[in-house]
Image (cartoon, rainbow over all chains, first blue to last red; front, side, top):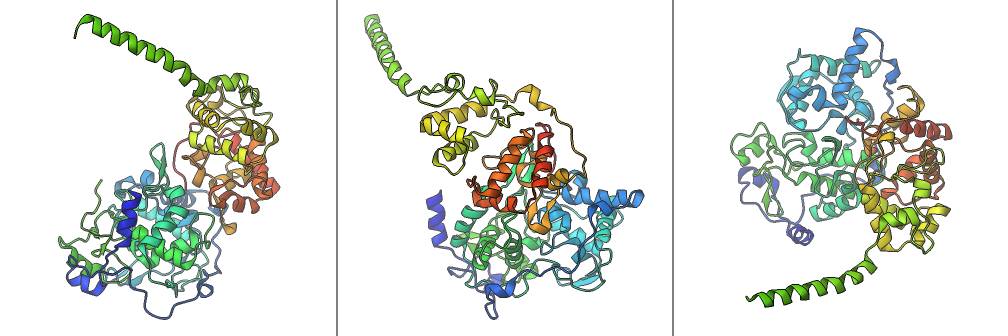
Length: 317
Length: 225
């Protein structure tokens, strides 16, 4: 199997992405993903932002009914399958990608997001409220369905976010918000075969050689990175720049910043070149779905890697 | 086939087995015997420190071995033998064991049931907002220290071959290991995870988090953040 992987990796085929959006099933052969355009940033230039905002300590959650809802929001956030089971279609929790229960800078903290909504989003073509943004997380990252805006789950998550953002300015992108992908470009185009090696050396320890994470008593300790229990093809983490920035800043857990920029991009590509659940916006035609929703070099959806057309065999539970 | 033929065959087979057995016995490792008698080549009986049932000795800081992951146990024995993990007693023991004996002992202890007496902790549970509890279940993210349970599993029950159980292990043992990571006398951790983490911890935090894990039940389930 390892030999097979190596052989396959040596013959990576991938689309010239714009061409693919029209005719995804006849990809152009190339050895790597096209490099991001623009000047190549040096490693020193892409240090994660030093946060200027500090969320309140958990001990400051008030007692009483408001505090109860804040705590409920935290519970949903850190154990989503248990506390929002009706809306979750995989085994992930919000806190898998938003570390420290949504508090950690450069890990898309809630305090960095809350004040940025309402916001016009290219993904939806509309101005979305914070609640609508959270709905997107459920639909894509959690591979589930959107909780109604007035549901107890949504109210709790919004209340938890509001509490965490108390004192933060409204409409200001704070240092440490989102993932640090500003000017974060791969020195060389991301490469699957190199990524596979980075994965084996740095990630498989926790996420498993098969990428399916590790579980105790049926519950994730380490989340699956692809496959039926992971985020779907519509989730932000399937885009290389998001994944690379998250990985660079935060992985391996407790050793964030230890991977080189190149390693982070390569392993992001390796992770995102595996099958996962279908994009819920799938039109019935892969090329058309790519053209409509994935027309970016950051998405491998609808492109061919290792002789496999990604998105053509989405995983099912 | 005539009856005589089959008798001859059976007899032949019996002889074969009879002659084969002693040869096999020379190589087979009797792990159970080593735990009670040692291996006769310098390895002391395991039970002397780890208990007859593999449950360990809390007061002396000798950890439970029963029910731990076999690959983890074997790696530790190998690492004592090669010096990446230090302990006068265990280095002497592991060095005196053959590779086969180390493997057999790891398998033996991994299959022992967790002693029922250990299922419920004997030490009192620190408060949920105590220093130890916060470090174990929330972490110190401003110093890149995740919650311990994020890798060691809910309440520290252990995950796979690389993240051993902390729940119910003697506080003395956990504290000694964290200090060993910090001081570099133990450096057999994958990706140097523990060597890095431990540098961010104060002596008080180490002591408190050790107490917290010692007080955790071994059958804890649930989510990790």
